Length: 75
Image (cartoon, rainbow, N blue to C red; front, side, top):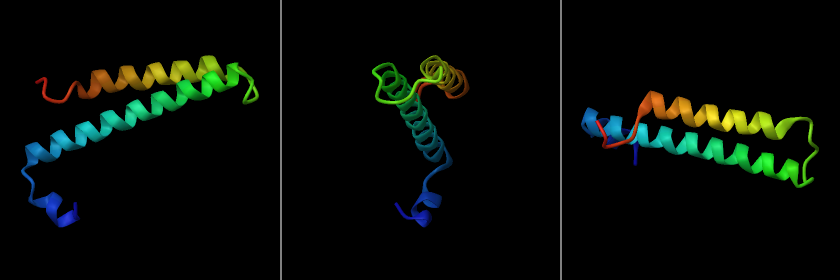
């Protein structure tokens, strides 16, 4: 999609697409934090207290996202 195409979309569609992009980004961040925590526990990465911190970060991202944006299509 070209920037000009984006501007031609109705505001409601832009909002729905933006929220879905934010939801996917939050899910990706949380998944990566969980994967890093598991790698530290398995010994692939040096553990400096990171797994618990990463899991806390993942929970924070998910909670903040769910409260701030809600589910797309569920007004």
